[in-house]
Length: 228
Image (cartoon, rainbow, N blue to C red; front, side, top):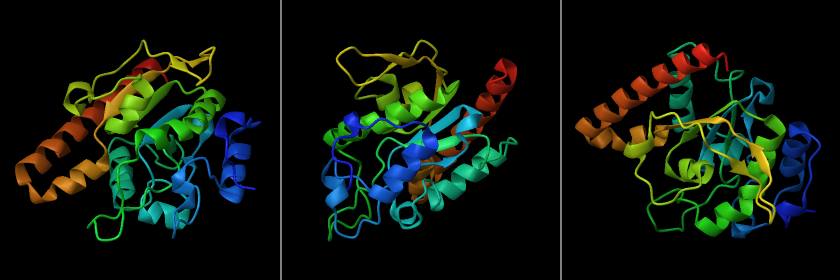
């Protein structure tokens, strides 16, 4: 049976979480009822790395392959990571704030849409369980929705946050008690999709590329210095 109440689910480990969601599916919000949805797209990479990358939501390619960041944005993310010597397959555990693809309405001219706040809230327990099970030493947030979700803020401008390491971030489980599940470093970066979408604007595209190159070098240096 598809999961309808994420908050009631307790997973023994990351493997259990990924297998259960992949096999059973989820109906916690309207995304799980979409026509043409392949299923839940949980994660890729190694939980044992204790480093997480968190994006926004799966797209068409991710939904088809049941794995995050495998489309054009994911391929660019891999290149960015590899440019400073990271292995995209083993150095990070990669997931999203929302685990089902938000399919844009027909005729909208778009393939996907930014997940709504209610969808993010319903999927939040899955994100919290992943963080609780992995206990990451550092979390890289890609784009505004992921950064807002992890830092517990809203209405931000990514330009004010990207490339700036956050330390005093207490990530709480979504419960009445607000149980503390981690206090990792958090490093916001631009989402690779933002770079791809800016290709028609040469100056903006170049700026985003330069900012991402600057940020990934900073991230690599910080991880090495702190032995994270």
